[in-house]
Image 1: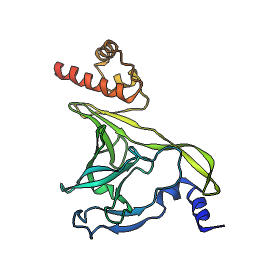
Image 2: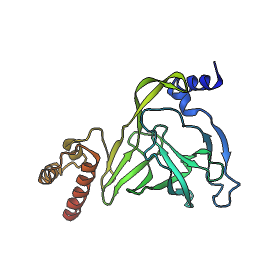
Image 3: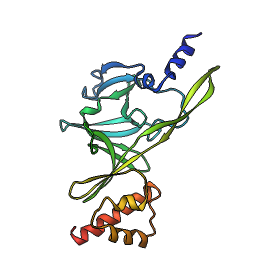
Image 4: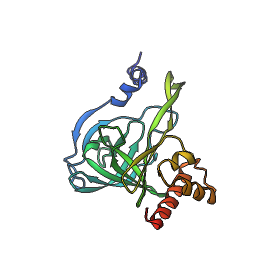
Length: 238
């Protein structure tokens, strides 16, 4: 068995080893254009999958704001939703570095289609904070956990060897934070679950959603609905 074949078989033996493979502690202290604050672990997530591990496949320019209040601009950043990590590509070595996300307060990925802003968030019942994309941030906040999960696996040929390849699909979780700070998880996208996030206003919200023909079947409709609800409740002073 060749070393490459052995590595592939080990990588796909289970998901846990895949997530921690090829790691070693590093700190970028050699490049004047980037601060030593960008520290983390060298990783290799370039293994065969069906479906992307990333929110955006391309490396994107980004701004990272640290818990200390300092910020840095980087040229190549990606968010890996399968491993729930922020990955930076070193400009000189091109190594992929998983940043220490506990040091990150928020970051923004500047995609041509939109800017994806991630903020630190603590879900109800959770003991630790996580990074979630902020889709809307006015009186109401709408947050999305950009989870990517394995839904299946298939056997395919890879460099002449049959290997098990994980099938990955986006599995986002949505949270609505009211003006009073109450957090509601939207487990399934539909009108009723959104209405329940605003107790006492369900009837008005139901009427509003019907008026705009919003059934809340996808993220775009959810975002439009939250925008309308925020405007309605803001006008009513509730």
